[in-house]
Amino acid sequence: MFMPAIAVLGVVYSSIFPVNRMSAESGDPYIGYVFWFSLIASAALLGACALRRQMPPITLPHVRAYAILGIVGVALPVPLLTYVAPKVPVGIITLELALVPLLTYLISWLLRIERLRASGVVGLMFGLAGMLLVLVPDVGLPDPDMVGWAALALVAPLCFACANAFATVFRPPAASSLVMAAGLTTCATIMLAPVILASGPAYVFLLIECLAEAGVEAGLPRELSDRLALLTVAGSGQLALASDEPPGTLRENVTSPGGTTLEALTILMAGDGLQPLMTRAIAAATERSRELAG
Image (cartoon, rainbow, N blue to C red; front, side, top):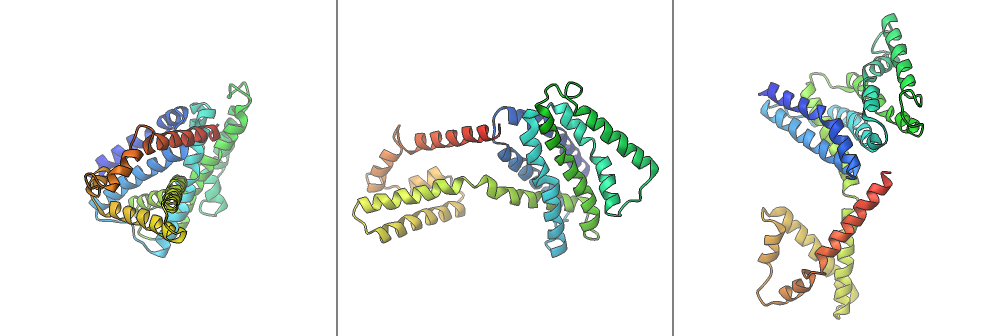
C-alpha cells in the first residue's frame, strides 16, 4: 500500500513545475495555487501516515522541526518559484533546482555535518560556474531583463538545500521520513492559510457593517443594531460549520414562505442583487492580484 502511495506522490511532484507555470500564465493568484498544492500534499501524506498508524507526534521538538522545515522547505521557496515562473524560461528554473544537492553539501559543511572533500569542492565549483554561465544574457537567457528574476529564483534551491541540511539538525530521533514530510507540509499549509484568507474577512466585516447600517435606517438604536448584525453573522457561521447541509439548504430552512425573510431575499437574490456584486468584487480582486504578480 505504501509504495503505490509514494509512486502517486512522485507523479504529483514531477507535475509541479509545468502545472506551476500554466497556473501562473493563466493569471491564477500564485499564493492560492501554492496553498492548494500544500493542502493536497499534506492531506495525502497524513492519509499515508494514518494507513501506517504513524501520525506525526505533537511534541515541542517535533513541532519545532515541522515549523522550521515547513518554512524553509515549502512556505518560502514554493511561492517564490510560482511567482517567478512566468518571468523565466522553465528550463532555467529546472537547471537552478539541479543545484540543490551541491548547495546541500556546502551548507552541510558550513554546519559541520559533512566533511569537505576535494571531489565535492570540484563539483561545487563546476556547478556554480555553470549556473553563472546560464545567467549571462544572450548565452543562457534570451532577455537581459530576466537576469534579476533568474537570480531571485536561486533563493528557492538555496531554501531547499537549507531544509535538507536542517532536517539532519532538527529531526527528532526515530522520526520517520513520512512523519516528517506530513508534519512539515501540514505546518506550511497552516502558515499559508492566513495569507489566503486575508481578503475573506474584509468581505464579511463589510456585510456586518451593511446589516448594522440597515438596522439603524429601519429605526433600531445604533448599539443594538451593531450587536444584532454581529450575532447574526457569528451565529450563521457557527450553524453552517456544524451542519452537513449546503448553505443554500440552510437558507431555505430558515426562510418562511411569504414571510419577511423571503421578502428581503427577493431583493438580495435579484438579477442586480448580492451575487452579481460579489462576482464583480472577486473578479476585481483577482485582476488586481494578477497585476501585482506582474
